Amino acid sequence: MDQTQRTIIIDDTTLRDGEQTAGVAFSVEEKIDIACSLDAIGIHELEIGTPAMGNDECTSIQAITQLGLNARLLVWARMHKRDIAACKHLDVDMVDLSIPVSDQQITNKLSKTRNWVLDSIQHYVSEAVDMGLDVCVGGEDASRADFSFLLKVIEVAQQAGARRFRFADTVGIMEPFGVLAIIQNLRNNTDIEIEMHAHDDLGLATANTMAAAVAGATHVNTTVNGLGERAGNAALEEVVVGLENLYGFDVGVNLTNFSDVANKVASASGRPIPWQKSLTGEGVYTHESGVHVDGLLKDFKNYEGVNPAIFGRQHKLIVGKHSGRHGVMRAYSELGIALTYVQAEIILAHIRKYVSISKRLPGEKEFIRFFAELCNFDTDSKTVSALAFN
Image 1 (cartoon, rainbow, N blue to C red):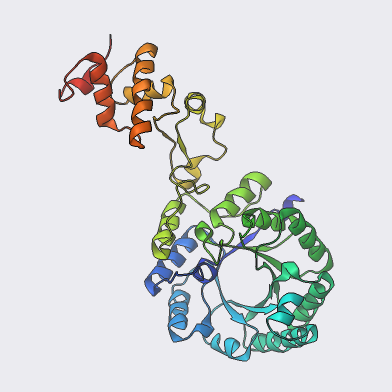
Image 2 (cartoon, rainbow, N blue to C red):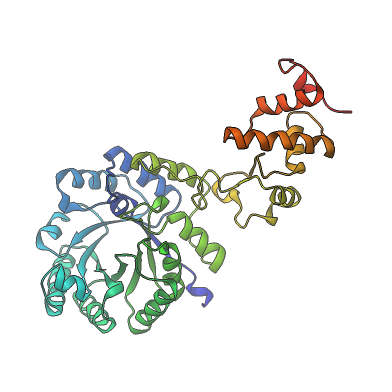
């Protein structure tokens, strides 16, 4: 890819599609807090709600528009007169007008025809533009649409005044090579802004989003922690780090305080961050294996491909069943106790037995007890932690 193309606009939809996760409902205060946090780290666009849901939803949308954020603000609507009318006077920058574009949904969801879809786009996009709104036409189920029909949809959308087309993999069935090919093909046939909206049903949302960016998409949808319907959407943190580290994109998002953002969304959604969640999970920068710890103590790059400092975090070395002598010696050195290799080997046997039985890691209390037993000291002695082998 040409270096001048290595930019992308993040359109984060945590407050719209993320909140559509089954059972999730953000309060107005939570939405404001999340919006401010995302704006502070440099997110370019925020999709902040669905006006047709009613007065309460519109109130939360207006509360965010009044914050004076740097991010452009979008709302989502169906290609329907009532939905578009609900967007009026909300002071947002863009509306995503969504309509099915696959024969599967045109026929079996709407009981309509392709011509009806094209007529609707022409009519309602023009209506929204006349209201003073920038318009993105959301191609629902675009991943199952006929390609020639997609081109016709985009042609009609542009003629009606739309500035962007959202390619939605609504049911999450695509893979990166297919995404790369179809977005490149769209890019070669139209100059409209193209936005990728990926779902994670096959665990490929992040990969598909990156493929779209490499292929020439101008915008990508994300959600914090990958929140979203069913298996979720492309995770914001994964997309940003992936595009920057793997493809050299200048995304312009500062993730130093992202852990705070991730925790806010986790708390507001009631969906905890899994221990092994990529990049943000508690265990991601935690190491136990003896071979790994030995390598990490020499150079952290030996076993970490992403520097935790990107997220304002640090490496964490723990001692457990799979630890080696170097890890044990390091843990005891932090207690002011210097062990020899032989002594570390003896204590390691105690540690492995302990974790196998208790199913948890030893803490300082257990370390001191193992040490005291080895030295035949009283485990209650207040001087134990200050003693060292000669």
